[in-house]
Length: 569
Image (cartoon, rainbow, N blue to C red; front, side, top):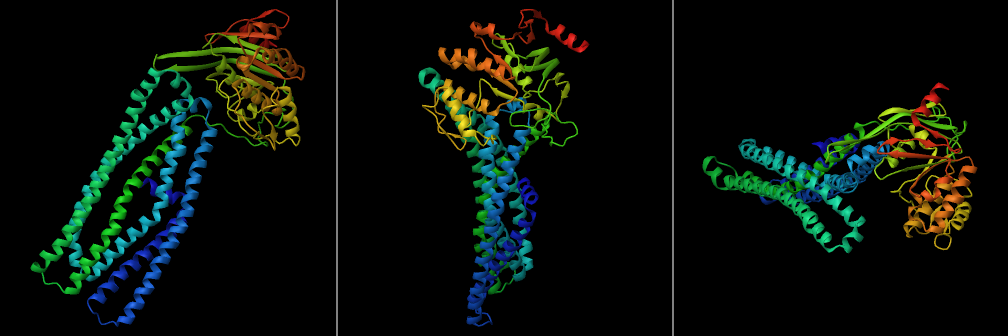
């Protein structure tokens, strides 16, 4: 029912059209049975007339069947594409923190396997519709032959429907369990692709991964699927048993109970035997539709989960409260002057340890043209603070102000357009998406030369020739994109950790001072104490708490004092 509701919601007109053509195809099938029955029983109609009817009905069946399938295939693909696009739109509107909590494997399964299962079911819908129409029109023909016999068969139909419903409920339960195991399986796939080097280097780890994780999950996944399919097969064969019982009762029991004409008896037996094919088609489709129903439910649940938290709105440029700032590829007006964090708080909950890590309260002001180093031990909250500053995480308490204007959910996307960031887990796109500079290739080639990459990578029409280079060189390619974005605020999360000593020195002594001289604000997360003296300020985090930070003239400025001074001013 969930799949049918989805189909009616997405393409109601197509469903109506397909239903009409399928019904016409089913009527042609039922009429063909009638023509065959009349021909076998030497009816009053001439053989030529019956042959003409047979030919016309055959053509009608083929044409209506073809039309219904072609139209539904087109709309089914459109519905599946819209389902995938809608899910991607929701993912792009969901806060980063919520996506991290949902988990990449669940999202990947929904975008790939779940949508594929729904698509397969939609593509099978025309055949199922035609088979259902054949069964319905066959029942009408049986009623025309003898409605009393048809009423007697309803007892077997009700018995079959009740037993079938019980089997289907059990089958859907196992399909749902299989779908849960599939999430775990995709998580193992991700571990395999991203951790293959570690697995190859450690025999015991590799064996434990196979025997302790992959094998149990694949076995559970297969076991649940087999249990579901077994129930589908039992239901299908049970329906066949009921059909044969019905044929046996009509052939051997009915004539001894009530006189029945040979044409009626022949018509009933012939029709019932013919309807077994469409019935088998309908019954076998329930496995496919069951998987699609489970997949669609998981997609909808993911959609609800994605929509449950705060949504990130893309406010149009004529919004009454936009952030009026100048970005490299963005809109214009007021230049960036300062970014202020006022008592910002953010927390993590560690379920395994049942503890909370609290970042803050943070009071901090970053000014235009300032080079700031953010330091601290591992797990102190540096990357979390950077994501809050860049607008990727929502503060749970406090506020962010840009040039004195408060950043909220409605203008946060505008706010993020000020930042070019390279995080430790950055993703490198092969093409420079979103950049429309007419001299893009020429500028990119200049930066490739400057970053010592021109001998390995070329650029054409905004697309890099390769990204299959070392991690340090991949970071330089990410830096290339950041330079081309030319935004007011640059954020680097341990960018220099994968660079050789020569280019690390270039980064700290040439590139960072140059960005500062161009009026850019630069925040660098780093452990390279050798270059700490180059920063205007050094901000230190200690387990989520901001310590005193020296200014460029060496004076210590306590974060709370900084906030109060700014507030008093």
